[in-house]
Image (tube, rainbow, N blue to C red; front, side, top):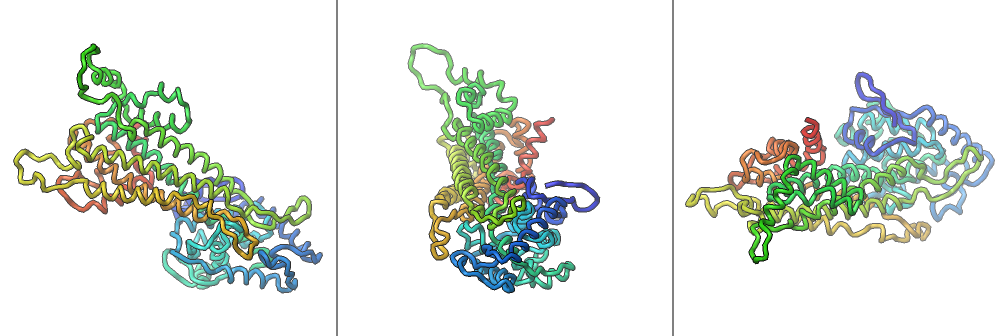
Length: 541
C-alpha cells in the first residue's frame, strides 16, 4: 500500500502486493483519516483479465461460476444471456448469515483486504466495481456482516455476500454509524450501485478477506499484549522484590530462542537501574556461606510465573511473527476461483480460496495469547496473596493503622482476582483448535474445509479476554507499587511512566469501590498502544 500526504485525508493506493497488517489496522481504526484508491497498474491488469474473460465467453467455452452453476451445480451450463442473473442469484442465496453483526473495525479491514486481493488483477472483475468498494469505505458506508456462516472454503462466501449486496444496493448498511438502506446511502454519497457482470459476484464473495480482517486485527492486538506482558513481568518482579538476575542475558544466550531473548531483553531494560543491583541482591539472598544449616530469609529463585515469564511470552512473540507473515501473504493474494491467466490466455481453476493458513495461524495465536493470559493471572495471585507477596497487604488493601475501625472492613483486589480467574478460564476454554473440525458440506463438493473464519473470530475473542486480564493485573501492580512507596517512587523511569498513565485513569484504591470502569479504561490503554508508547518515550530520555 502506498501512502501520500496532503491536506485532508492521507491518500492510500492499493496495488494487490504491498498491503501490511499495520496498513489494515490504520484504515480499519481511523475512519476518515485515509482515502483509498486503486493503483494504475492494478486497473490495467484488471482490464486485461476482463478482456480475456469476455473473449472466452464469446467463444462459448464453459467457465466455472460464469457460464456454469456454482459448487456441485458446476455441471449445469446456463444460457449466456443469463450470466449476469447468475451473479445476482449468487448474492441472494448466500445472504443467510447469522449471529451478531461484526464490529466496524473488522468490516473495514475486510473491505480493504478484499479490494487489495482483487487489485492483483486476475479475477475478471472491472476496476470500477472495486473502486466502488473503496469509495464505500472512504464514505463510511459499511455492509452489515453477520459473523457466523463461513466454513472457510470456498473462502468466506456467506459473509462476503453482504459486501457484494452493498455494492449492488441491496439490503441495509451502516452509514456513518447509523443503519440505512443501501441504495439510499449510495445515492447520498453520489455513488451508483453496480450491475455485476459475469464472474464479478463470484470474485467478490469467493475469498478469504473476512477471516483475514479478523486475523490482521488480532495479530496487531496480540503484539500490544506481548509487550504489555513483558511490562507486567518487570513490574511484578519489582513490586514483589524479586531477583532481576533471572533476566540476565547470559541465561538466554544459552537457549537462544528469538522470542524468549526479546522478552528477557525487554524486561531487563524496563527494570533499568535495578539491574545494577542484581549481583548485590543475589549475594544478600545467599548470605555468608558456611556449613551450618539455616533458613534463608529470601528464596534464591522466584516463582515460575516470574522466572519463566520470558519462556512463555517469547512463544507469543514468535507466534506473532510467524502468523504475521502468513496473513500478509494471504492479504496480498488472489484467493478466488477461477483465475484468468492473461499471459497464457487461459482460465484456470484451483483452490486459492482455502483458508488453511489463516486457520492454522489463528489457532496457534489464540493458544499463545491464552497461555500469556494464564501467566498474568498467576502473577496476579502472587501480588494479592499475603503468603507470597513479600510484605504487601492481603488482597492489596490499603495500609491502616493498627486498631483502625477500617481494619477487616475492606477486601481490595479480592473481586478483581476472581474476575481475572474467570476471564482466564474463558480464554483457555476458547483455545480448542477450530481447524480440526472440518465438515463436508455443499453436497459433498466442499468435502474438506478450513474453518478459518471460526479460528480467526476465536482469536479475536481470546485477545479481548486477555486484554482485560492484563488490565486487572496492571491495576494490581500499580496498587502494589503504591503500597511499597506512595506515588510509585521505587520504580524505574520506564515502569514509572506506565504507573503514571494507569493512575491518570484510575486512582489508588484507598477503600473498596467499583472497579469495572477502571478495567475497561486500562484495557483500552493496552489495546491502543498508549502504554507501550509511554514506556518507549520514557526509554528515549
